[in-house]
Figure 1 (cartoon, rainbow over the protein chains, first blue to last red):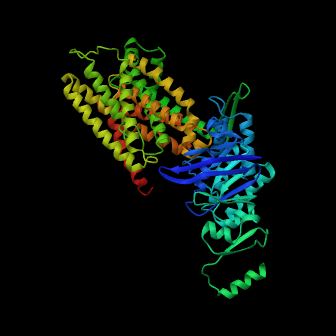
Figure 2: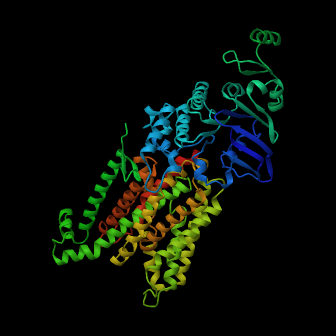
Length: 275
Length: 351
């Protein structure tokens, strides 16, 4: 079962074509990660799947229905997107932010129903933000702030969540914190997660499904174990590397060549020991 | 820790989340407004204590006293309050939809647009004896159209993937200068006897307020405020940025245009009766934001009260402290507002 499906999707900024005639399916209930080098169009693809960008041609299906024909609020009840680097206005508390995820469900006078309250509290709880709900968003650390925004998208109560580089600008600890959170949301609540990540090793570790984008097209698509190897990294990132099993998870791990402090021979020995 | 109260009725069909800290600020500022109101009613060539003023209003004064209060002071005070509310709310809306803390009715030239329209309206529709040939009810409409034209011009000229502060301020000042020039032009072309009167009005004064004005402005403001109140959640979502707003299903272009029209309607109606009382639309939302944060459910009503306080205070000082001289309220709001604006600009220099 596929949540999202693109059919001959072409995206462009003005005259400049970003993705050409793309056919892609996003499986339901899985974590899908889009990877690719800078400017390859992975973020553009993600944004278009959340109707933030209109396709030049082709179409996107959401649960088998043409997205262009669905009312935007109905889409917002099925699919949430967290864009890259959202900025919250000065003086907004976490609760006030998260509450706005209920926007598609609110009406003129019905702005805080019992259901709204229950879902907002659940969103705060699953992101570990309950304690911080009265804090100002500006006063939070990078990781907490990102969790607050994720809580807002959770409050939208959608089966599918799209995230554009949710770990950018976060230190390693917070990157893991955010990805673990998304992993749990997928495990426990069976939500479909689609995100753009820069770190291919983390992508392999968390994703059921990887989509590698290169030169206006999908270069490879499948389980990390099946598709991530030296050829893929070379093809997508133009980088020479060894791909070895991650010592903790056994998922593919990319160790780039290039230059380093130790001699080549020593480096190769290390690789052999682990593989 | 902040406390909230959920208000629910009719099986959640009416339901809101109230921020208790914000309610406290509302109550305090309303009380303050009430006190200033009573002081203002009592102040003038005939001085009454606030207590006496209250009694006169309740009908316990001499007929002379109640004449002064009911016929001369009250309409002026009410217009001040209404104008303060309108300008402050319009400023808060502009700051949100233009996503720029410097956006305010005057700095963007929108007030100027309304002024041009009013002067033009007076020039076209008045006879030699300085009386209007059409109903004064049309004046707010003229001001609204003038304000809207400038707002749309601003939008078209300054918009480039959002509104940067500098573009906005530069183009706003350009529009402001243009509207100023046009206002002067129409004043010179128009009947000479109006020029002096219009000059006071352009600086921003509630000098000529009467009950007739109140009867027009009060219902108009009330209706506009109700619509603004309904649009509050759209304002909140717009402030989170275009992508987020689109993501949760907001129709931002339509809402933004509707909100823009609301703000120009508020500006137009207040300019029609009080001229360009400056910087209230800039200061009031800023002060309110410092007190209750940026959630519009709290921000808009508090801005409104603070705006009312600012204009009422400015007019009360203007008409009493320098007696027998009358200083237009706009002089005082500009005297505080202009430095404040420069301070904001200075603080933004690195942003």
